Structure formats: C-alpha cells, structure tokens
Image 1 (cartoon, one colour):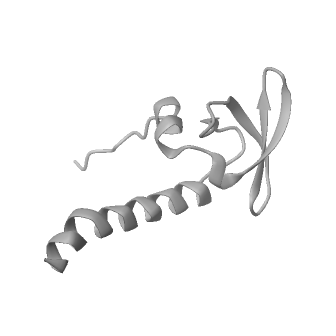
Image 2: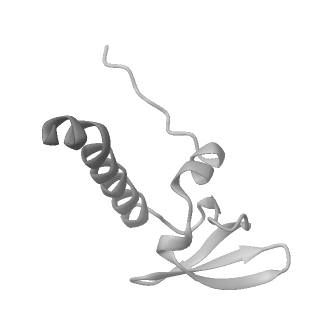
Image 3: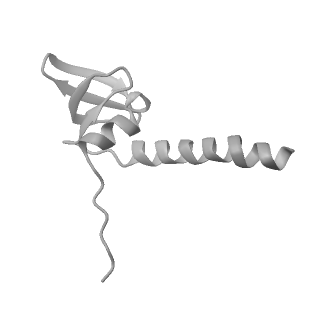
Length: 84
C-alpha cells in the first residue's frame, strides 16, 4: 500500500519540486516571465533570492520562488535539439 502511495503521490511531487528549483537557478536577465499571481514582465536584475521584474507599470522586486514555471514556459518555449 505504501509503495502505491509513494509512486502515485510522493514521487511526482518531489520531481516537480526539483524542476522548480532548477528553473529558479536557470533564470537570467532578459527572460520573459509570469509570476504565480499573474504579473507579466521581463527580468531586469537578479540577486541570490530575488528578481527585479520590469513591467509596463514599472519595476517590482519579487522572490524567485514567486515566478511560475508552467506559465513562464509558455512565453519561453524550450527548443529540443534532435541528435543527428
């Protein structure tokens, strides 16, 4: 019973958390992003744990964890290269 619970609930959540951390580490200046609250913008500065987001209304300082992985991927699609 525990094995079923692990593979259906715990493992997918751990994988998602790992993807979120990799996404946060991979952010760079100039990336278009959408925050979890729905704010659209472009990263103008990065610090260790925060990002300055430039929006149409001005600049906003937000935590990196407030940037949405799923919504931002729609703006910056990952191009997969095929091996020849």
